Image (cartoon, rainbow, N blue to C red):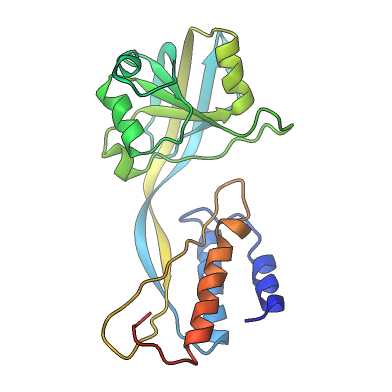
Length: 243
């Protein structure tokens, strides 16, 4: 692969392709086609994913609605409670989560979510963006099944500027309303096998989907192009391990 081919791939896949969407499948089929152009036979392997369509997502602060996006697959309903800003994960700070809608600074990973559950939080707020940027963009986030394990809290994501406002204005009580249709969809792995001299294998992987605010050129079509480059090289060069 040369730089012109790489640039062409990056330009032709410059569109949003969130997991399980028709655009993601379009990109998977495109990658299979690029493998075929290299004389390689890739295949698609479908797998089930949790998906949702948000119908309503509201965050009410002192009687005023502020922009938000509901967490996909976080259930439906409404909850109103005192707001608590979780600055640290020490035992005292976590104990203050009980009965509160909790705003956190960090990404909502497995352990952070378990902290919220174990300490009695009734909802959560996350934020992204940058207070110094002019945009008010809000990313679409998802409560993944390996994080919730079936224990769902209503949650929304907001812009960083709004998060600062909640703290600056000493907001006491907030209300989250979330309604969504949850269902099972399909995503796809693009798989290419290059057998080696022995029956031992090295797995190289990269994701080709993107977030809702990104065309995914850097994150992570660049990684997918890198793997195509590896395949292009090793199809013509002997290798000990299967790839």
